[in-house]
Image (cartoon, rainbow, N blue to C red; front, top):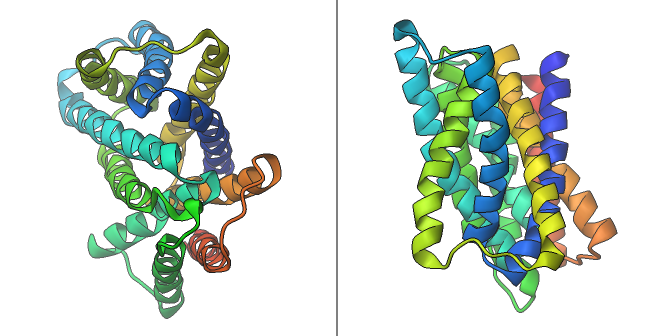
Length: 275
């Protein structure tokens, strides 16, 4: 139960953060918004982890290395997500990113977890949803789908690193966030800096605070429960994003996209129910 609760909290935090980040990204650029988010998270997590946990010991080197790899993958996943939000609708992008739950379930199965006909059907539903939702057409809302799919795959790598890294959750989150920031700093400096207009800074900081909550809950979720349950529960950010995008942003996907989003969300929800 705690795994599901923390996973859903992470999903809601990420979906709301994405909504705030979308506005900032569209008026600045993805890498700039990403830097602001990462700086806020690192400023909180790194000193707290050093004070409470200290430097990882010799026996935790493998876990620390996996956390560092997770930071590299997180940088790529987050950048792809923001690039998708820069041109696409919140509901569509987040729904496709939520396929990370299906990708993780497949990965866990390939690593030895048994699969039932019901879970196989749920995975197939996720694939159908991805195809329907990403079909290009005259509507603007289909844009960004390739970025979203790439983001979901990279986030799956992050989840696997978190799952197999035997290190406490606070150190794991701090190392991951610190590495992501170390990559983002020179990338932003070499491509345009970190300036955000004053009118957008509150949104940028708010997105960073929500993303930090999502990351902490994300890490705790994998520390608490089995990877399949953790992954598909966190992937419910797609469900929350569809609601936020439709109600607050007045997004209107095409009929085939609604069907794709519904298939994606249903498939991920079934995986959460049966794993």
